[in-house]
Length: 301
Image (cartoon, rainbow, N blue to C red; front, side, top):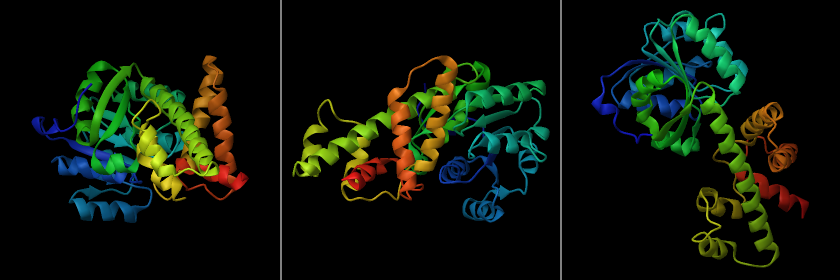
C-alpha cells in the first residue's frame, strides 16, 4: 500500500491516457501536473484537444497512435466492449505498444475481460494491471482516489509510482483480476449503505424529525459512513446532479451479480438494490447520482 505524492521522486515517463470522461480528464491532468509527458485520446476528439490545450500535453486520433512509444498506457473508458475496442480494436493501443511497456486499466469491467486482455498483452510482452478506482468525480479531481489493483507484482511495482499522482491509497490485492473483484466488493458495500441511508432519511421525514439534526447526531456513532457524511445534505435537499450516475451503478452491479452466479456467492441485498435502481431509471433518473434511491421512496409515498 502507498500514499500519493511520491511520484516526484521517480523518473518522469511518457504516458498515454485513453478516455477523458468525468474521471479520466482530471486523472490525466494530474499526470501532466506531475511532470510526465502525456498524450491523450478520447472518442470525441474535441475533448482531447481541449485537454491538451488546458494541460499542455498532446492528443491523438486513435488509441494506437496515442500509445506509440509510451512507457505506460492508462485507460478509463465505459465498459467491457469499450475496453476491448481501445486495446485490441482496429486501431487498438496494443498494436503499437512495445514489449516492456505497461497497460493500466482504471475502467470498472468484468474480471473475465481483464483476464482475456491480460493474456493478449502477455503474448507481446506488455505488462497489464487491472486498477479500478473508487472516490468518484471529486476524488479524481482532487487526486485522492482509492485504487485496487491486480496483476504481476513486478509490473504493479513499476506502475504504482505513476498512479500515485491521483491516488490517496493504491494497493495490489492479488494476481490478474483481483482489482476488478475488489471493486465489485466496493460496489456491493455502497449499494447496501446507500439504501440503508435512504430508508433512514425517509423514515426521519415521515416521523417529523429534523433530518440534518438527526444525521449530525448519529453520524458520530456506529451508524456513520462516508455516504452519510458526504450525501445526507443533498439527499435531504432532493439534489442528485453530482457523483456516480445510476446507469453506471447498474452496470457495475450487473457485473457483481454475474460474477456471483459464477462463483456461487449469494447477493440477495445487492440484487434487490439493483432493482431499486431500475425503478429510479424508470423515473428518468439515469444520470442522477446513486444517492437518488431516496427519491424512489419519496415517489412511493
